[in-house]
Amino acid sequence: MPTAKEVQRELCRREWAERIAECESSNMSVREWCAANGVNVNTYYGRVASLKKDTAKTKKTSTQDIVPLSAVKEKPDVPSVAKSETAAVPIRKPVHEKEREGSV
Image (cartoon, rainbow, N blue to C red; front, top):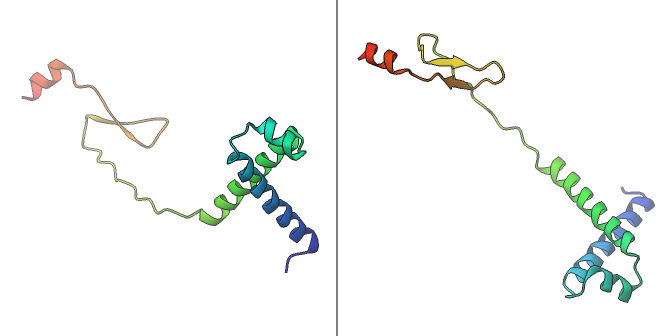
């Protein structure tokens, strides 16, 4: 069960979400809307940042999934493929004209 402080914080968050939505739909600049509604511009932007942070935190924890990956077994008998030292992705070596002529 949430504490009284958590309930108060959630109510404040919802109130600011509504105020920000109202400002965005007002066709006024943020400064004009803040002046008309008695809100300090720095407070407004602070609340916007706080809501974005809370939203990102909620999305990160609620939608984070483990995705299975499969590895491709490397074939050692293929001379034109070299393994990168910095990544596990094979890198194709360029084939020179002389090598190409000799294999044909």
